[in-house]
Image (cartoon, rainbow, N blue to C red):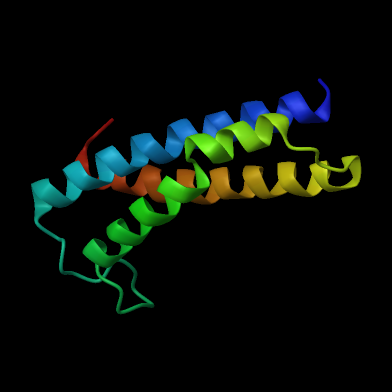
Length: 108
């Protein structure tokens, strides 16, 4: 597969994961009422703060204009490998968090 179509496929995979995660994370927080508890053991950020920031960032990073840009803007070939690696790393990181949320809330 050429690099551009691969990047588009991975971006769309991540977009689906992020929106699924957002929905299920909200369900988890509504179910457990952990909104004001720390989201991470090494941070004072609450689940509500993390969720709000997740919404804000994902609405920007996975907006329709961003999706169109990934498909149409010229990206030098030398940068495609870096973008692909970054998208894959983001997917792995979010998958770990999502798996933990699913485990804790039985959202499987």
